[in-house]
Amino acid sequence: MSLEGKRIVLGVSGGIAAYKVADLASKLTQSGALVDVIMTAAAQKFVTPMTFSALTHRPVRTDLFESWLGDDTGHVALAHDASILVVAPATAHTIANLALGISDDFLGAVYLSTRAPVLIVPAMESGMYLHPATQEHLETLKRRGADILTPAVGHLASGASGIGRLPDPAEILSHIQLMLGRRGPLAGKHIVVTAGGTREPLDPVRFIANGSSGKMGFAIAEECLYNGADVTLISAPVALQPPYGVNFLSVTTAKEMEGMVRAALRSGHANALIMAAAVADYAPVVTSDHKIKKTDTDFTLNLTRNPDILGGLAELPFQHLVRIGFAAETQDLVENAREKLHRKKLDMIVANDAVASIGADTSALTFITADGATTAFPPQSKRDNARLIVEKLVHLLADHGPGTMGDGTT
Image (cartoon, rainbow, N blue to C red; front, side, top):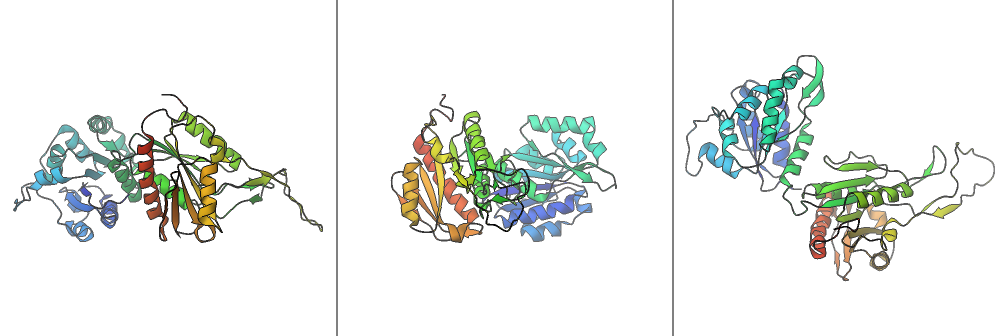
């Protein structure tokens, strides 16, 4: 999800973790957001306002009584225009002030004035964080609708180790994107996404696999999240971290993936299934319990057909499930993809050149829908392709309309 056009108000209070928030301000700005930083008096003891001004290319607010010039009505305008208010680091003092409605500084005044979503990111010593007073204040803020991001556990400024560290700026950024997407076009929808390449074991150390990196499926899952969906991501082994906020399920073989997909569709009342995984078509008939030893003779491997996960769903009672498949081909791209779409009764199939796409960071996709429409796109990043797929998913869901969900119940 792009943050282009979003106005992020970032409240920085006086903790040693303030220096880490400079990185967050930079990441937000690079993501296209307009970032307005508010610094408490204590925060300025740790980081100068010039640091944040240089990173955001915006003036930093420090004084509640600063002059209002033209259309800039101080904290009133900032609170009104905010897409979200993020307080990081949120110290025990700042948390208490916000919970009690104390507005003797710019941050407190904006908090009371804004109706935007609020994210509180506590960071302090373990004892302060766990004290009943701090926990009660956090509960108060939560009851009023704020999101509270739990601190990380690790080395603290005092030299001790425990809970209280500021979460990684990338995690904070992901949570901001999730919050901004809650009212997105996929709000209230449950989307199941598969990713990665399945592995079919020959013995305890060898397996049949393909070169799928999982990047496309992970990007789709993240884009669905940032558009408001509840996402279940079922992945074969990959060298990727699951997107923050997904329900992540790990599998290895095609049969395991089939079982997990069916379980997710039935128990999660899914609205859509996007099969971006590269599922092995065949598996060894026999898997050895021990490492197969090399001999002087040839080795014959007998393979059996794996289940067709999407094809196997065609006759099941998932009437209102939008189904999107992928076709990685080396020849006759559109013809082979169209045949697969009709055979598996899909709503859309995403065709791509297997040699150019598998494992790469970019790909050129062709969308083919059940009504026969075909749209080809130029090569672009898998992140950009994921946005295109999710945009199409929104339209497909609208066409399906409300009704029964994954298990056939109303």
